[in-house]
Length: 420
Image (tube, rainbow, N blue to C red):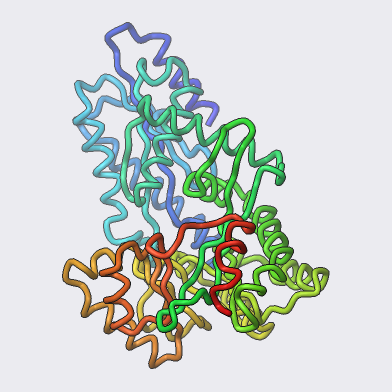
């Protein structure tokens, strides 16, 4: 790594104002999965064989390269390539495509076949940095942009990306302060499809930062998860929701459910279940009134520990809901294998339903009913959608057609007499 940085800085010192030097930053997606499930020896074989293929890919006649310091493994599963004396960005595009082609069907090596892909970020001297540190930082930021866009892609650093990276850094800095006085829970009503009455609520986290203003959950939750800051947030949400449970039962009754979202990253934690049970005991609450929502993407990290935790939650009396169903890749066969009580059909599938996908939704609902799975449709925005979903047989409806997320006092004021 040190030699690589020296090589970059040496090229920059010798460059004139017309020279172009590019840094290509490569991160292997899902490499942790290989280490965790197959062991570090297998991971080492994968890294070694990728390094050799990377060397072969970039040592082509259309690229003028120097010596071996132009390629490096910077850390863990992160690699970098320096390209210099190239005429235009087409050269970089072709190189990035060749690197991604190594993972066109996962990664095959002598240790086996693995679901590993790559995300690539590209930064170019002088516009994206005039030293090795800046080029690496900016290429790394571009790499995360490629990763966020769906992996096995490449992205160039840009000013827009710089603003996004700066915003993410600001959010991360504020999250690390753990000032929970800035957070509040809102509650999204869940409507019984038959009676039209409120039958449950979903707790939704809102952040009113003194430094950043209102920060959308779509912004801060992925950052909290990717930076390992989700545990304290999840526990705060869980405890705060338990504080509100008595008040909520006043409008929901004994059969109503309080639904709480948990980070899918928590599902592999050995202590997460114990933390929730400890909170329940301290608050004197019963798990039978609680539903834990996990996003459909949890299937990608399914492991023996995750499966064990899900079964522990079930045994402890929690209801388990699979959120955003239809937005990810969970199959119906996998759905049968998970200890899931509820699926929440994603808004994207509801929107498609009105454009010709109604039969698919009906088939999904009927399948779930045969598996004794409760079906909720989320993201309902029109009377037409609501009526079609009721006729299709959904059990519950949720969306702005019925109501928006409300602060506890507003929720109680609005629904205090609706179920009486």
